[in-house]
Amino acid sequence: MVSNIDILVALLYLALAGAFLVVIPAGLYFYLNQRWYVASSFERAFMYFLVFLFFPGLLLLAPFLNFRPKRRTIEA
Image (cartoon, rainbow, N blue to C red; front, side, top):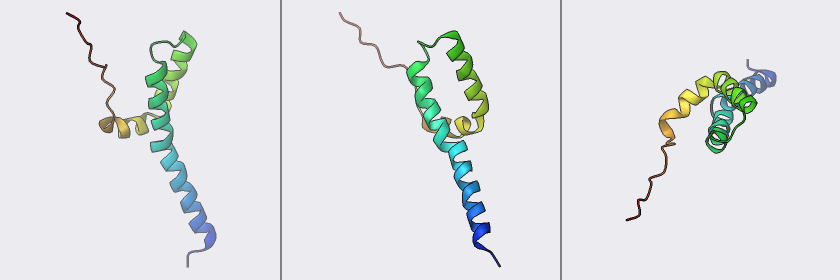
């Protein structure tokens, strides 16, 4: 028989996995997109550490995100 503690532990594991694979990498993508070209050397090293730490989640979200540069307008 499944007790309430077992269900609570399963929900906790599910919440932590969702945070590790979806929520935190999505926030990290936003952070990297905003700060990539203006970061200091210490902040860039911290960015690399976060990418290494959350690599599975970033890999999971990568097919759905598009960070291509904006199209330039050429004035005649």
